[in-house]
Image (cartoon, rainbow, N blue to C red; front, side):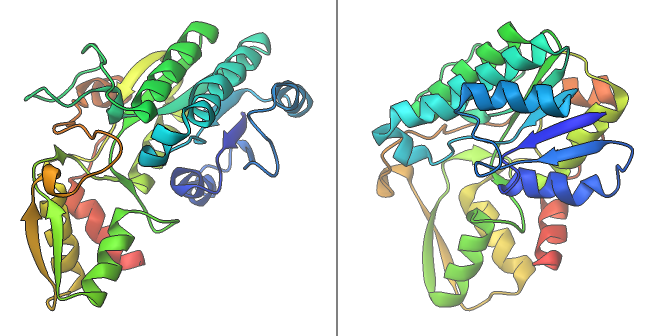
Length: 282
């Protein structure tokens, strides 16, 4: 299969490149903005036609959650308009599409894990634009899958794990919010799930994927420091109100992963097990 992966320089895109070596039966086109500007409609259509793309995995997004509040138009371009055009071009050329989305499509007021059929209710520009992108992809490409994920980290780029490692070494104490609950997701595990879907065959619809288990950002930080052997930094729990941010974060964004596990036979590791694997690579 001829596969286009956009956003190839991001966390997930990089993990897709790493795992491509284990899936040599496909031909890959890994692109970032300098190779293919997905905000350029003509460029999208020309690229997909020229390379005869059969599947698009869109890992590109505007993910700066707070900055999105000040740049709603840019967030909309990348998170909604670009996926829409990718989906339209995919449909025209008989290709399939996998769109990566987010737990931020929910406002986080639930107390039990969000299933795919729960009513979305985003509470930020980022969440709103990502949800709009989901609708565009599903409405414009018959063979489309949306995968919502959460709290993504990896050995690539900037992310929460790397920041906590750095601060743990630089400071003797650190405050981290304890009243936002979710599940960290190792981007390598998500990439492996995407390859499982590709190899088993597209079953259109919305799916949820994160690692197993539940924790707060505070718990996550404590685990990062413990597994990394950082003992000199005391981590203290903060209320969200003590750490003001421009965009609202979901207080509870645990995703129910039953559908993706049963549909594609995917086994998902516990978040702490995956964190340990990531830290070993770092």
